[in-house]
Image (tube, rainbow, N blue to C red; front, side):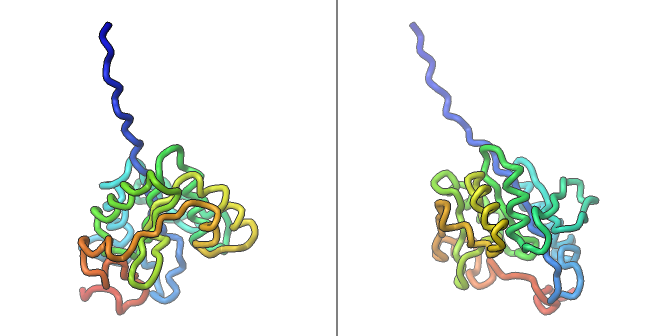
Length: 200
């Protein structure tokens, strides 16, 4: 009798989400549409996620926008609840695959770092990098196990992105793990004000 070796199951590719639902108050205009490297910040984020993920969505906030980008847009699960409402909307799209969430205003995060986060996802419900300033919950991987706890916190009015972390397994990865991907002071630098933009 011939016994065939069992094939290793290939994990499904992650689903990517650009977190672009902010109001851009400090910028004074929609930061997602500002130029960065010859494209917009939104297109730059989409490109990095497409190179890492099987499917890509835009978390567009409480109002529908960015539909011209050729990818599905998702409305927040609740109005006025910040990025946690976007996270819940994204998590509801997941099957067995992890969800890779990337804020539109984190343009310095390279594809290799995103791929590294995904590789760590099998061991936890959420994988969150730590920068020198603390956790970076909008450049992180979340699994479907986070959906119910995040929904409960959202319904309770607890809108912090870390509110549901006590209810799931969160792997927070030391800043030392990211030094090989670029200067630690700029990897997770947010583009929040006009002064954060490169000169034209």
